[in-house]
Structures are given as C-alpha cells and as structure tokens.
Image 1 (tube, rainbow, N blue to C red):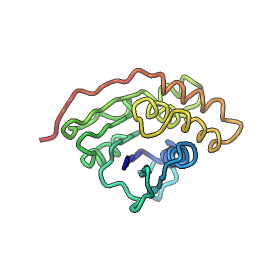
Image 2: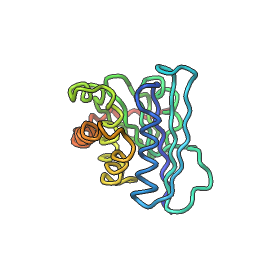
Image 3: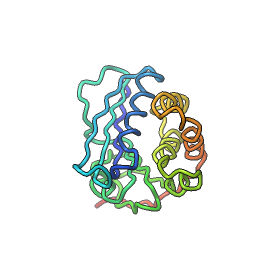
Image 4: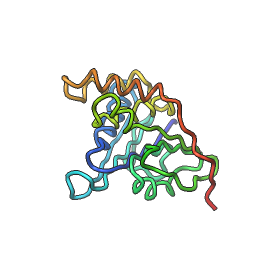
Amino acid sequence: MSLTQIKVGGFGGQGVVMSGTIIGKASAIFDNKFATMTRSYGPEARGGACGAQIVISDTPVTYPYVIKPDVLVTLSQEACSQYLPDLAENGTLLYESDLVTPGPLPPSGNAYGITCTRLAEELGSRVVLNIVMLGFLAKMCNAISKEALEEAIRITVPSKTIDINLNAFKHGYNFEPIQAAASVSA
C-alpha cells in the first residue's frame, strides 16, 4: 500500500486551499488514486493562518487527516515553524525561500527552497505563486504526476487564467531547487 501525506501551510491569500484542492483532484481524478483534502484557516479573509492537508493512497483512505506529513509545503515562516516538527523522518520540506528559513529537520529529512513569489511576480501575477509551488512539488515529489497536476489546474482555475497558471506551473517545475543546509533536530 502506498500512502503519502502532504500538508500545505501559509497565509490566506496565498492560494493554500486552492493548492490542496488541485493536489486532491490531480490524485483522485487524473492519477486514479484515493485522496482526501481537509483545510483550516483563521477568521481573517487575507493574511491569517491557512492550511490544507491531503492524504493520497492506492487504497481507500480511512483517516482523512495528516499525522506525519511526508511532504510539507510552507509559504510562510509561521507555517514552517508550526508544522516542521511534525515532518516524517524521511520527509521533504518544500518552502518559499524568500519568506521562510527552515528550522531543524528530522533524521534523513530534506529541505528544498524556491522563490515562488518572485517567480510569480516576474510572470506578471503574484497570485500564481501557489501554482509555481505546485510545479516545484511535481518535480520534487513522485506521489502525483506532472500531467495530473496540469489537468487539475485546467479544471480548477478560472478559464481566463489557465494559460498564466500553466506557465507558472512550468516555471516552478523547471526551477533548480535551493537545498537547505542539513540540520538535524536534537
């Protein structure tokens, strides 16, 4: 049985919940796996803490919440600080390197950064920073196929924004990761 737990964290307005929705759709609809997605957010419309949890499996998912994320995606320092202690022993942290400084990783953990906000701004729309990160996720995580994520983007984002979103995804996928120095928690 293959089970992958993914947690995405950041601030409201960064597309965290949409990222979780796209990952879930990609897995369940286009990769023919079982997936659940739960979300949480603060009372603020923008700027408050926000998170999405996705469980992907080859068999039906019996518990929808992430316990120990295999992949942790953080778009804010607060999310990284809050969720990093829960990262699985061999887990992978993907982080927005202009906004996040990773803390100690678990044994055999890896951390890779991407300047997704800056890349999105260079593309002309800061709001696609989450899609840049999804492209990076596709490159760094084999739980979801690149093609499935692209198809999920097509059916999730507004039709007039499909091209810029797919371009953002491509830029994230082609980004050379910034590997964080290996720091192991005590």
